[in-house]
Length: 104
Image 1 (cartoon, rainbow, N blue to C red):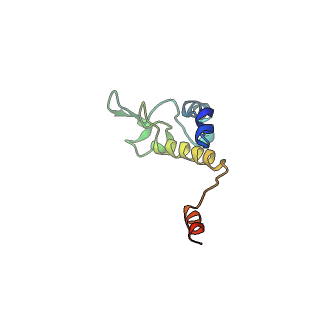
Image 2: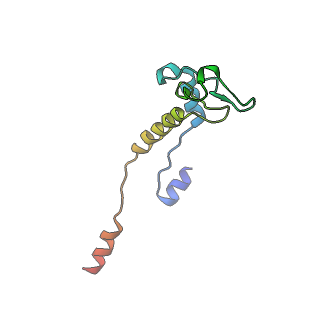
Image 3: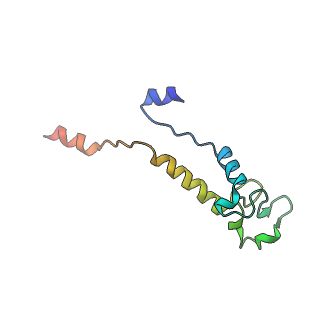
């Protein structure tokens, strides 16, 4: 990955979603989840967890079903990615400025 960064003069951020979610599972209460190891909906049996209340209480669950995070879980991942991206030192070249210099 470092070779690609050097070749194209870019920064690539690494985010291990498996590791991140594992940490959330072990500290579920800190993130406001009552259920981090059980899904709200069981796709295999097409049934809801009794405490999910047919999806109305899905924010208590990290996972909506066996494979997908809940909306609250998605927001948590999105916030973590946002924080990661904000750590970059953004230098943006203004293409209009380059064009204006040629006209002068």
